[in-house]
Amino acid sequence: MDIVVMYCTVPEKKQAEKIAKTLVKHKLAACVSMVDNVVSHFSWEGEMCKEKEVLLIIKTRREYYSKIKVVIEKLHDYNVPEIISLPIVDCSEEYLKWLVRETEHSQD
Image 1 (spheres, one colour):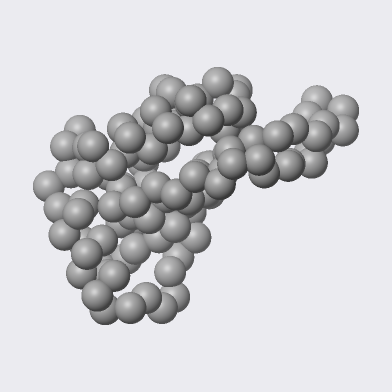
Image 2 (cartoon, rainbow, N blue to C red):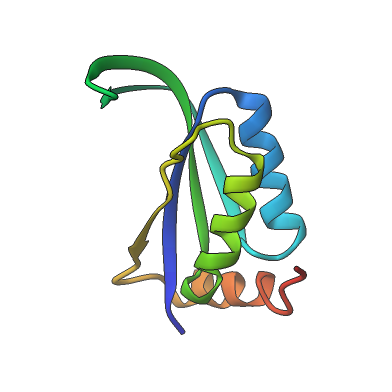
């Protein structure tokens, strides 16, 4: 089973919580960790930007990427939200079993 970690930054905690709860409730993610007060530096439309954001770390199955992307785009305020998926190379067997169990029978 392919499992991944997805990253998504959002502008504020309330929006982060809504996305996190939606993904876990619908079994699209086993866990979503929130890291508050992330400072992001980026270029947007030719301007240098610096923003405080909340980073979501989403633990899920690779096959759910498209569904998670739809949820994030629906609930996110940014025109171009960060939605990145990274493979998990190694994982404890116990954690893997838990993740698989918690994401079985995903509810759309």
